[in-house]
Length: 129
Image (cartoon, rainbow, N blue to C red; front, side, top):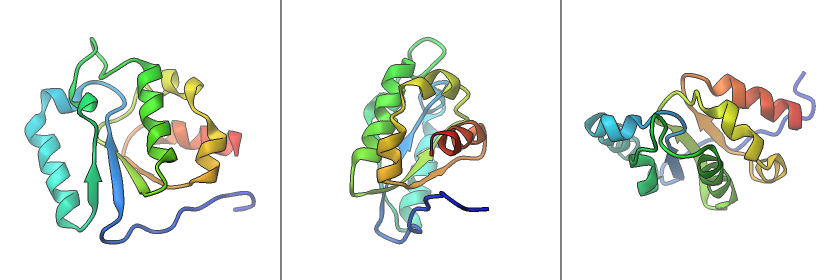
């Protein structure tokens, strides 16, 4: 059943994780909630990184699909990064996915943590695995 699956290592205290926003500019509209989430991740011992661009606004989205894909790919290319936390749903993933290089993701698997819409990107990983 798990044939061909590639699983990342579990997260541990001190691990570097990146927080991304891949849909509406939620961090822009709710900075207090965003900062509360960042503080929680730090409190449980993770080394948290995020780029200033995720705090911006590009119309009804945080950035163009191509820019968001670049953020995802940069996170996967960073050998020190152990996980990605999505700070919002990610309903823009259907536009972003065309710019994703799944061969790089396969070389450096990591957890992507989110409660909503992540099933879409997960099914794409399975398809291109």
